[in-house]
Amino acid sequence: MSAPTLKMEGSGNGAVLHLAGRFLTQSLGTVEKAFADVKAAQGVLQIDMAQVEIVDTGGAWMISDLIKRLETEGVKAELVNAAPQILTLIDAVNQAIPHEHGQEEPERGFRAWLENFGKGVERCWISGVSIMSFFGLTLAALTRAVFRPWTLRWASVVSHMDDAGFKAVPIVALMGFLIGVVLAFQGATQLQQFGAEVFVVELIAISILRELGILLTAIIVAGRSGSAFTASVGSMKVQEEIDAMRTLGLDPIDVLVLPRVLALLIMLPLLGFVANMAGLFGGALMSWIELGVSPGMFVTRLQDTIGIWHLLVGMIKAPFFALVIGVIACWQAFQVQGSAASVGQRTTSSVVQAIFCVIAIDALFSVFFAQMGV
Image (cartoon, rainbow, N blue to C red; front, side):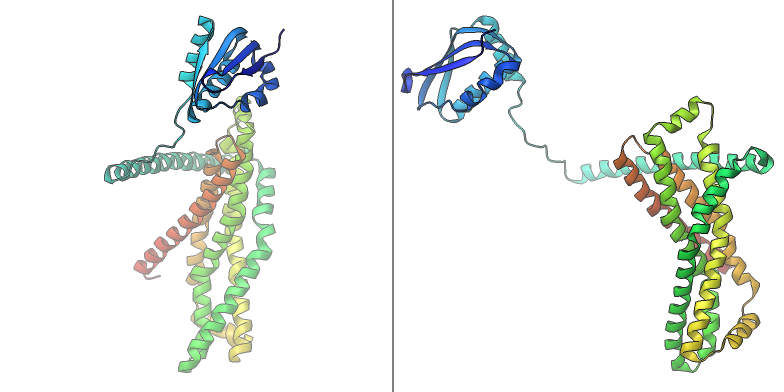
């Protein structure tokens, strides 16, 4: 097989570039630099192809690219003595090459905004229907587990209770303690101005037991355990393990979702109680240091003025928070679309949506209990 060659003869309008050999893709590397070095003076350059044996699309592209480059330099290139089939191939390649590489600017104006808004509403509607369907499947699985507890995978439930619950106790307790300290310190600063330091007990107890204890615990669980649920199940989705479960006749809701949601339903109230106790301890300690309110006086004041309903109001919210965090985390995991980047995006969305829903539900409960006079 003869290798492709090129030779320049003459100059000015009499310049001729002789091409010879077989211009096939696998051998074009030998003449690539020579093509790039071709220069011609202003005028006409004839490209003689009488000795060219065969040309494929790679060779046609190289010749066409040379002609375009010379035209940009002000040189008119003409193909002479070329076989008709070679000219046809070069014309086809030339027409297939895009001549403009710019990006189309997005449409602007009210119509474009309205179109994007409509698409956003459609996506929200589809996501809302999807998550409500997923929520219904989870509730159905929970109902089956209540009436048939022997079908539940208790080993998986206990494992997730350990990961999402017991291992979260240190960070939850520290958070509650620091919140109690901050509330006591800030409350002392303000109440000292009115000589009402003793009311710092009510400030700490009501704030922590009704709102901050369980709310901040749910936010920590959403960021810690919810993200872990989305990442682990999402990775299984990427590796097609969920499809393999369905092939084996296993329901992913029963195998993956139910144990995680049930673990949160059990552990979140307990973590909330830990946060409450740690918050009261931190508040009592800071009150003793800052205001001189002894631990005995703090406990007595707590028993006399704080009813059990303040604790129950916070604990009632815990199962709702747990259900929302678990369902959103697992639903986002099932929306992963076959790449590691999608897992990261869905994990971020899971944490953001779970925290938003937790705060929204807490606000609704606050309004409800206020209207009920509790």
